[in-house]
Image (tube, rainbow, N blue to C red; front, side, top):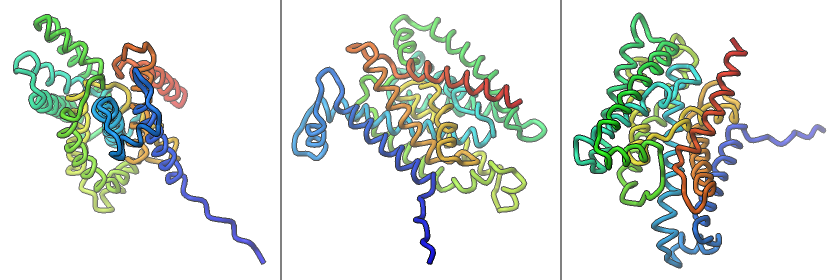
Length: 331
């Protein structure tokens, strides 16, 4: 009589559980860490409402929540564009969407009064304008992911130069604020900054989750996607809108946080062992990366908290060198 071996859970389910546990662990560490250490018991007491702490509930919790939600949003945005371009370099920060959103924010700061609503609207508008320009330039004689990446890199360089010119021409106080904001930071975020962005990101991620199956079919080839009933033109437009919306919403609040959208999808794909780039591992990996980078930014030169974009750029630069080296060897 043979004994059947116990069934193992799918690798993706194990990876999802581990990443979710890491997010919770980093969140607890973020709530405990600060100028004064709070014990896990004290944090849990505040979260369950038995105690009240302004430091934990009003200062640390918004920052921890922003790290998780914004990291997940950037991970999904990166997965969208890497699936769209079928290229590991096809992320919002590489093809110019971050720079376009920053241009919109600079317009709000220098021309308008720079209110949170104006920053959000202008960031989304700037990202949409740049994405439209990149997309229209890349669809000549048929859509090509490689062409989109190359054109996006060129547009990114031009928009970055424009942003530098705007900062140089701005008043000193506005220029200082714009340069500091451009590093990408979660310092000082509170619940009033997060209510609307969290709602927008929730809607965008829900829309993208409903289209996840169709998106994965497109990653296997246009012909296969069409035969299974996927409307490629409408799906690609929706993917671009959701990706731009996720990127611009984060940029409007925290500034352009580089390299999370580039690294998270590829790391998530390798962890899950997936042929395509699944959304859930990319989102969870993005949350882990941004939370971890923010904790490092707080601890590195404590008590001075660095902008999280400084850490993510340093780590992401190493990742980009590794990725380019691997792609060159493969070629």
